[in-house]
Image 1 (cartoon, rainbow, N blue to C red):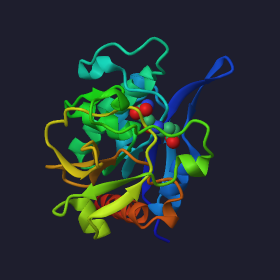
Image 2 (image 1 turned 90 degrees about the vertical axis):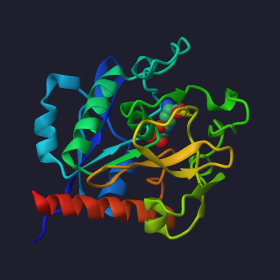
Image 3 (image 1 turned 30 degrees about the vertical axis):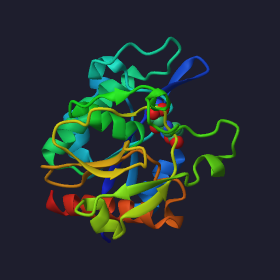
Length: 250
Ligand SMILES: N[C@@H](CCC(=O)NCCCC(=O)O)C(=O)O
Protein backbone atom coordinates (compact mmCIF):
# COMPACT_ATOMS: atom_id res chain seq x y z
CA UNK A 1 0.00 0.00 0.00
CA UNK A 2 1.22 3.49 -0.89
CA UNK A 3 1.99 5.41 2.32
CA UNK A 4 0.78 8.97 2.58
CA UNK A 5 3.13 11.96 2.50
CA UNK A 6 3.96 13.33 5.95
CA UNK A 7 2.96 16.92 6.59
CA UNK A 8 4.27 18.61 9.74
CA UNK A 9 2.15 21.26 11.45
CA UNK A 10 4.02 23.67 13.72
CA UNK A 11 2.34 24.02 17.09
CA UNK A 12 1.55 27.08 19.15
CA UNK A 13 3.12 27.00 22.61
CA UNK A 14 0.45 27.95 25.11
CA UNK A 15 -0.15 27.64 28.83
CA UNK A 16 -2.87 25.28 30.05
CA UNK A 17 -3.01 25.98 33.74
CA UNK A 18 0.59 26.32 34.84
CA UNK A 19 2.06 24.00 32.19
CA UNK A 20 3.17 24.84 28.65
CA UNK A 21 1.55 22.72 25.89
CA UNK A 22 2.16 22.50 22.15
CA UNK A 23 -1.13 22.67 20.31
CA UNK A 24 -2.49 22.72 16.76
CA UNK A 25 -6.13 23.42 15.88
CA UNK A 26 -7.95 20.28 14.74
CA UNK A 27 -9.35 22.03 11.65
CA UNK A 28 -5.79 22.32 10.26
CA UNK A 29 -5.09 18.65 11.02
CA UNK A 30 -8.35 17.62 9.31
CA UNK A 31 -7.53 19.69 6.24
CA UNK A 32 -4.12 17.96 5.98
CA UNK A 33 -5.64 14.49 6.37
CA UNK A 34 -8.69 14.91 4.14
CA UNK A 35 -7.92 17.94 1.94
CA UNK A 36 -4.26 17.21 1.18
CA UNK A 37 -4.80 13.43 1.65
CA UNK A 38 -1.68 13.28 3.78
CA UNK A 39 -0.43 12.08 7.17
CA UNK A 40 -0.49 14.84 9.81
CA UNK A 41 2.27 15.18 12.41
CA UNK A 42 2.27 17.89 15.07
CA UNK A 43 5.69 19.53 15.53
CA UNK A 44 6.48 21.13 18.89
CA UNK A 45 7.69 24.73 18.85
CA UNK A 46 10.90 24.26 20.80
CA UNK A 47 13.27 26.48 18.83
CA UNK A 48 16.63 24.77 18.51
CA UNK A 49 16.07 22.30 21.39
CA UNK A 50 15.44 19.70 18.65
CA UNK A 51 17.32 19.51 15.38
CA UNK A 52 15.45 21.35 12.62
CA UNK A 53 17.41 19.39 10.01
CA UNK A 54 16.12 16.10 11.46
CA UNK A 55 12.57 17.46 11.33
CA UNK A 56 13.04 18.45 7.70
CA UNK A 57 14.46 15.00 6.88
CA UNK A 58 11.22 13.50 8.19
CA UNK A 59 8.54 15.58 6.43
CA UNK A 60 7.24 15.84 2.85
CA UNK A 61 5.48 19.14 3.50
CA UNK A 62 4.88 21.77 6.17
CA UNK A 63 1.78 23.70 7.14
CA UNK A 64 2.26 26.92 9.10
CA UNK A 65 -1.11 27.53 10.71
CA UNK A 66 -3.06 30.51 11.93
CA UNK A 67 -2.88 31.51 15.60
CA UNK A 68 -4.25 34.28 17.82
CA UNK A 69 -0.66 35.31 18.63
CA UNK A 70 1.33 37.87 16.65
CA UNK A 71 4.84 37.59 15.27
CA UNK A 72 7.09 39.67 17.52
CA UNK A 73 7.77 42.96 15.69
CA UNK A 74 11.53 42.76 16.34
CA UNK A 75 11.62 40.18 13.52
CA UNK A 76 10.59 42.82 10.97
CA UNK A 77 12.01 45.96 12.65
CA UNK A 78 8.46 47.02 13.59
CA UNK A 79 7.45 49.32 16.45
CA UNK A 80 7.03 47.51 19.80
CA UNK A 81 3.62 45.86 20.23
CA UNK A 82 1.05 47.37 22.54
CA UNK A 83 1.34 46.08 26.12
CA UNK A 84 -0.74 42.93 26.52
CA UNK A 85 -0.31 41.77 22.90
CA UNK A 86 -0.19 37.99 22.65
CA UNK A 87 3.15 36.69 21.36
CA UNK A 88 4.61 33.22 21.00
CA UNK A 89 8.41 33.61 20.94
CA UNK A 90 8.89 29.82 20.97
CA UNK A 91 6.83 29.54 17.80
CA UNK A 92 8.70 32.45 16.16
CA UNK A 93 12.02 30.79 17.06
CA UNK A 94 10.85 27.57 15.41
CA UNK A 95 8.86 28.63 12.37
CA UNK A 96 10.91 31.55 11.07
CA UNK A 97 14.12 29.53 10.51
CA UNK A 98 12.14 26.46 9.43
CA UNK A 99 10.20 28.23 6.66
CA UNK A 100 13.43 29.48 5.11
CA UNK A 101 15.25 26.15 5.39
CA UNK A 102 12.28 24.16 4.06
CA UNK A 103 11.87 26.34 0.98
CA UNK A 104 15.61 26.16 0.28
CA UNK A 105 15.40 22.36 0.47
CA UNK A 106 12.39 22.22 -1.88
CA UNK A 107 9.93 21.04 0.77
CA UNK A 108 6.34 22.17 -0.02
CA UNK A 109 5.13 24.88 2.36
CA UNK A 110 1.65 26.27 2.94
CA UNK A 111 1.14 29.30 5.20
CA UNK A 112 -2.23 30.27 6.63
CA UNK A 113 -2.98 33.58 8.42
CA UNK A 114 -0.18 33.81 11.06
CA UNK A 115 1.75 31.39 8.84
CA UNK A 116 1.22 33.77 5.88
CA UNK A 117 2.53 36.67 8.00
CA UNK A 118 5.52 34.57 9.13
CA UNK A 119 6.40 33.76 5.51
CA UNK A 120 6.32 37.45 4.58
CA UNK A 121 8.62 38.30 7.51
CA UNK A 122 11.05 35.50 6.58
CA UNK A 123 11.42 37.07 3.13
CA UNK A 124 12.19 40.49 4.65
CA UNK A 125 8.65 41.89 4.50
CA UNK A 126 6.90 43.95 7.18
CA UNK A 127 3.46 43.82 8.79
CA UNK A 128 0.74 46.32 9.59
CA UNK A 129 0.05 45.67 13.28
CA UNK A 130 -3.52 47.01 13.06
CA UNK A 131 -4.85 46.94 9.51
CA UNK A 132 -8.13 48.57 10.60
CA UNK A 133 -6.22 51.72 11.66
CA UNK A 134 -4.48 52.11 8.30
CA UNK A 135 -6.21 54.80 6.18
CA UNK A 136 -8.13 53.26 3.29
CA UNK A 137 -8.04 49.72 4.65
CA UNK A 138 -11.09 47.70 5.73
CA UNK A 139 -11.52 46.10 9.12
CA UNK A 140 -10.39 42.51 8.54
CA UNK A 141 -11.23 41.31 12.05
CA UNK A 142 -13.98 38.82 12.86
CA UNK A 143 -16.95 39.86 14.99
CA UNK A 144 -16.16 38.82 18.57
CA UNK A 145 -19.77 38.02 19.50
CA UNK A 146 -20.58 35.99 16.36
CA UNK A 147 -20.90 32.20 16.13
CA UNK A 148 -17.94 30.25 14.72
CA UNK A 149 -19.83 29.70 11.46
CA UNK A 150 -20.37 33.45 11.14
CA UNK A 151 -16.78 34.28 12.09
CA UNK A 152 -15.36 31.84 9.53
CA UNK A 153 -17.99 32.53 6.88
CA UNK A 154 -17.12 34.42 3.67
CA UNK A 155 -17.04 38.21 4.18
CA UNK A 156 -15.11 39.82 1.37
CA UNK A 157 -14.03 39.19 -2.19
CA UNK A 158 -10.50 38.53 -3.34
CA UNK A 159 -9.21 39.28 -6.79
CA UNK A 160 -7.03 36.43 -8.03
CA UNK A 161 -4.15 37.29 -10.37
CA UNK A 162 -4.90 35.77 -13.75
CA UNK A 163 -1.28 34.70 -14.40
CA UNK A 164 -0.80 33.23 -10.94
CA UNK A 165 -0.66 29.75 -9.46
CA UNK A 166 -3.90 30.15 -7.51
CA UNK A 167 -5.72 30.98 -10.73
CA UNK A 168 -4.20 27.88 -12.35
CA UNK A 169 -5.45 25.64 -9.51
CA UNK A 170 -8.86 27.32 -9.10
CA UNK A 171 -9.61 28.63 -12.60
CA UNK A 172 -11.46 31.80 -11.56
CA UNK A 173 -10.51 35.44 -10.96
CA UNK A 174 -12.81 36.11 -8.01
CA UNK A 175 -13.83 34.35 -4.82
CA UNK A 176 -15.30 35.18 -1.43
CA UNK A 177 -13.10 34.46 1.62
CA UNK A 178 -13.31 34.68 5.41
CA UNK A 179 -11.22 37.16 7.39
CA UNK A 180 -9.96 36.64 10.96
CA UNK A 181 -6.93 38.87 11.42
CA UNK A 182 -5.89 42.32 12.51
CA UNK A 183 -2.35 42.25 11.14
CA UNK A 184 -1.50 42.12 7.45
CA UNK A 185 1.23 42.51 4.88
CA UNK A 186 2.60 46.07 4.67
CA UNK A 187 5.79 45.69 2.61
CA UNK A 188 5.84 42.44 0.65
CA UNK A 189 8.96 40.34 1.14
CA UNK A 190 11.64 40.08 -1.53
CA UNK A 191 10.96 37.40 -4.13
CA UNK A 192 7.28 36.99 -3.23
CA UNK A 193 4.64 37.14 -5.94
CA UNK A 194 1.16 38.56 -5.24
CA UNK A 195 -1.49 35.93 -5.97
CA UNK A 196 -4.64 37.63 -4.64
CA UNK A 197 -5.75 40.97 -3.13
CA UNK A 198 -8.72 42.24 -1.12
CA UNK A 199 -10.89 45.13 -2.40
CA UNK A 200 -8.85 47.56 -0.21
CA UNK A 201 -5.63 46.39 -1.88
CA UNK A 202 -4.41 44.32 1.08
CA UNK A 203 -2.37 41.33 -0.07
CA UNK A 204 -4.34 38.16 0.62
CA UNK A 205 -2.18 35.48 -1.02
CA UNK A 206 1.36 35.18 -2.36
CA UNK A 207 3.73 32.57 -3.67
CA UNK A 208 7.53 32.33 -3.59
CA UNK A 209 8.65 33.23 -7.10
CA UNK A 210 11.80 31.10 -7.44
CA UNK A 211 10.66 28.20 -5.30
CA UNK A 212 11.45 24.66 -6.52
CA UNK A 213 8.06 23.48 -5.28
CA UNK A 214 4.75 24.59 -3.73
CA UNK A 215 5.49 27.62 -1.50
CA UNK A 216 2.27 29.52 -1.11
CA UNK A 217 0.40 31.39 1.62
CA UNK A 218 -3.02 32.92 2.24
CA UNK A 219 -4.25 35.44 4.78
CA UNK A 220 -7.69 33.79 5.00
CA UNK A 221 -8.62 30.37 6.41
CA UNK A 222 -9.09 27.69 3.71
CA UNK A 223 -8.91 24.94 6.35
CA UNK A 224 -12.34 25.92 7.71
CA UNK A 225 -14.90 23.46 6.21
CA UNK A 226 -12.44 23.03 3.34
CA UNK A 227 -14.43 20.32 1.57
CA UNK A 228 -17.44 22.65 1.15
CA UNK A 229 -15.43 25.37 -0.58
CA UNK A 230 -14.04 24.91 -4.13
CA UNK A 231 -11.23 27.45 -3.58
CA UNK A 232 -10.08 25.70 -0.38
CA UNK A 233 -10.37 22.30 -2.06
CA UNK A 234 -8.15 23.52 -4.92
CA UNK A 235 -5.48 24.84 -2.51
CA UNK A 236 -5.25 21.65 -0.41
CA UNK A 237 -5.33 19.47 -3.54
CA UNK A 238 -2.38 21.36 -5.04
CA UNK A 239 -0.51 21.23 -1.71
CA UNK A 240 -1.14 17.49 -1.32
CA UNK A 241 0.01 16.81 -4.89
CA UNK A 242 3.28 18.70 -4.26
CA UNK A 243 3.85 16.75 -1.01
CA UNK A 244 3.24 13.42 -2.82
CA UNK A 245 5.74 14.43 -5.47
CA UNK A 246 8.30 15.30 -2.77
CA UNK A 247 7.64 11.93 -1.07
CA UNK A 248 8.29 10.08 -4.33
CA UNK A 249 11.51 12.00 -5.00
CA UNK A 250 13.21 11.19 -1.70
N1 LIG B 1 -2.53 37.27 15.11
C1 LIG B 1 -2.56 37.50 13.72
C2 LIG B 1 -2.90 36.22 13.04
C3 LIG B 1 -4.36 35.91 12.97
C4 LIG B 1 -4.68 34.43 12.88
O1 LIG B 1 -3.88 33.62 12.48
N2 LIG B 1 -5.87 34.09 13.35
C5 LIG B 1 -6.26 32.74 13.53
C6 LIG B 1 -7.09 32.58 14.76
C7 LIG B 1 -7.24 31.17 15.24
C8 LIG B 1 -7.36 30.13 14.16
O2 LIG B 1 -8.38 30.11 13.43
O3 LIG B 1 -6.47 29.29 14.05
C9 LIG B 1 -3.51 38.64 13.34
O4 LIG B 1 -4.41 38.98 14.10
O5 LIG B 1 -3.32 39.17 12.24
